[in-house]
Length: 457
Image (cartoon, rainbow, N blue to C red; front, side):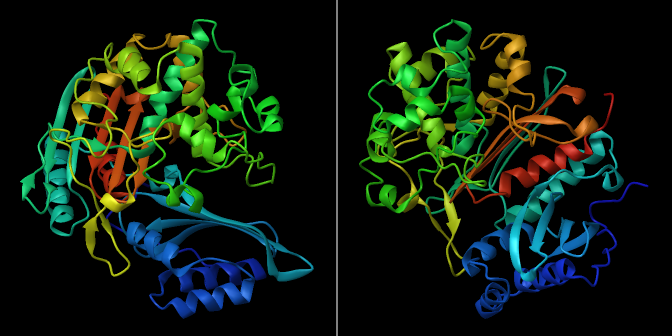
């Protein structure tokens, strides 16, 4: 039987086992606003979680309720949680050391697909529009959303709305022409750039980085890691948001600058690191696009993606350049107050993320992509199919959902910015939401509409 999202599912009973005790301690610490409770949890299970990181997560989820438990003996467990805020489900998968159940071998808290037994009822468009308007009003009043949402179905825009403020100091309202920073959603443009060059025979998926960047500083990395591995976050390339980067945040202006900063770093071949989400890998892909095409990254994307898709309001101009209609971003500080995110922004968006666009441009991007203007339909199908053993990523595209909820696209989240871009093949629908607030502000609105959209209409 379907369960309404506004009616919390019945809590599942946590087993009286070492793994169950871990979950109980985790929930207690996660729900607490006292940093000492997190420190006590860390001491008990030899963890290194920070109270601040959990506070940020809690702001996204609210309280979490265990709704399904899959035990793997006394020392292993996977727990599915329903979140108080939004439609998202989360999971915690834990393995403890049988010889010492207070030692954690593996644990991770992450987003999860909504199971069929918790499906949300679909409603007629008129009812959905009413529900969406009420939700947007609540979320704007609570500073949980300011931005745009646009939905296309069967090639026609069926819903669009702009709410909140684009500039709080100037009291400038959001309009459908407002440009929002999109964080990692920009990875799609980088992936498409690479795949266009693959189709031209200028890049091979299984060639190594050194094939295209013969002067790459770390020669072992260059002759080991492939283009395919970078596109799928399987190359152990690592992140870019490090203390070294923060010290030179406004000096790092081009893909070559990032390579200069990180090019001597070794591949992360650890169990968690090799397949971890790797922003630096996409910066490297952008540098490879430059080396192969002979154009700088930004010019290539403008000419080969924005122009054919008629994306007139998209770009990655530096933050010190005045861009008409570009919103300001607002992030919650440690005291829970919204502050301008200017001090966190890079010099300009990179191949890993950070450009800006409008909801309308992202709909036009979806149309161009699905029509074959940017990639062949065969290669797009490959790029938007699982290319990792764990199934959550293709070539520059996130893949999630089940049944009619199956979707591909990419999100983006950083302080003061959140983007959701999803294509639902079974529904023949595209859902875009953009916000100038922290994650998961846009994702939450996109989820709400997509999960309730009527079938077969």
